[in-house]
Length: 354
Figure 1 (cartoon, rainbow, N blue to C red):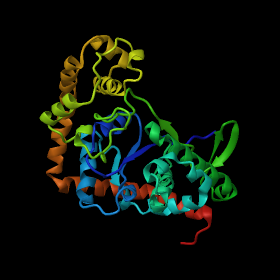
Figure 2: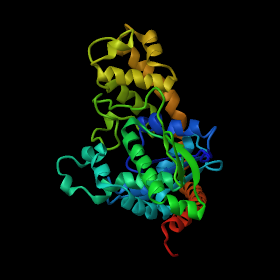
Figure 3: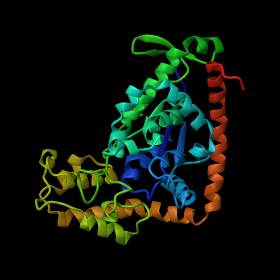
């Protein structure tokens, strides 16, 4: 069987300040993946409207995400870095997928329930259809792999469902146009236009939790700035936030089992492990039996060492918005070229005249 050409796609919303969780859970993975993959990384500004319809400074928020990509080590010449709204195919394919996806599928999306809260009737249609646009983002480039956290894995499963239904519904049209390839799904051969996307979930800290509440994910929208370490925080702020991070009165255990029921301790150990590229067991073997008064200063030093170069480069890049805009224009043109091929073929498969 023929295989789709490997391609990695992912994106980050331009909403608020990027923080340590974004870096460890996403951007650092993006950097590592580009060594052996063709990668497309997107600032998903259209998705940002589902969280906040009116943004005071969307252009600079978009530039900030782009600066973080570049400062962390993403190469915009070898790979593609662009903003979603610059490629019309995202919205066009999302509408087609709105017609492919089933209401029952969308009703099962737990993120909508979490974000909409108790008053679901007041949530926007965009928030409800968010996973369909996410599927379009990925499949517009016929991407094969997406680095995601556990909280996005359900959306990726929906992307696979949408791809499969489109492939099955239009199987004869795909054969007639000659755009598809033969793949195996399970044990069944399928003539497919869209690939069955695979998640890339790995790393020692896939989820970084709030410094004020270890049961909640670190978030840009948290009212307390002390809950997160922003990528633009200076050394003083990093130190203050880690020193003030919530803990419990007990010392660190020597084994992972001792972290059970201690979410704040588990979070700080996980952050240290991720920044040091160690396992949590290795961290506990080093600090087991120590109090947080010893562990926190060590974590401060490690965080400052890891983040300061990125912060400095982000500040340098943000001081030259013209350069960032040029990177986005170039990336958007290259992304559009790929997307236009997909949309021409999708229109032919469906039977649209254009």
